[in-house]
Length: 229
Image (tube, rainbow, N blue to C red):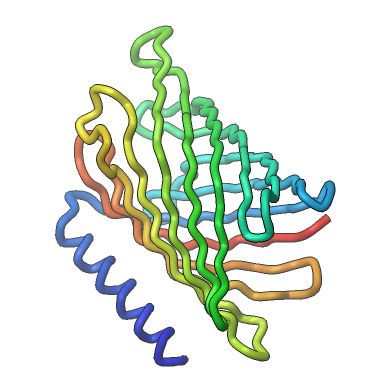
C-alpha cells in the first residue's frame, strides 16, 4: 500500500467516524450494479445500468433500478449527458413497493496531471413518485449534485484507486434545507481491469443523509461490473 493510499484510507475512516458521532441513526447497505456502454459515434455514447440495492445492513432489498443514458462529447475532456431512471422501491414499514422516476441532465469535465485523473461532474435531477399516503398526490424532489473525484493510475498495474466526494443541494421550496446540502457522500474504491472490454469497481461509501426529518449515517459497500458492447 502506497503512502498516498494510506492517507486516503485514514481520511475516509476519519470522516466516517466523525459522521457516526454527529448523526442520529445508522444503516448499512450493499449496492450491486451491471453497467454497459456502446459507442454510437465519435461523440455519442449510449449507456445503461441495472442495479439492486440492499439496506438494513444488507438484510432487506431497498430498490431495483434500470437507468439508460446518453453522453455527448463537446470537447476532448468536456461532456454533456442525460439519463432516465426507473426504480421499484420497497416501503418496509407499510409493506408495499412503489415506482420512482428520475430525470437528470449534467456536465462532466476531466483533467489529467501526471498520473492523477481529476473529475468534476455536476447535474440537475428531478425524481418523483406517487405519495400513497395522500391519494393522488405526487411527491417530487429536485437536486443539484456536484461530484469531485481524484483517481491515481499506478504504473504497470491493472488496479486504479480513487476517492470521491459528492454533495446534494436541495432546490425544493418549503424543504427544511432548501438551497443547502441534504446528502454528503464520501467514496473510496478501486477499479480493476479484467480484460479489454470488462472491468470491475469495488468501493466503500459513507453517506450522511437527511430524511424523515433527521440525519442518517449510511455505510455502503458496492460492486460494479462494467463492459463495452
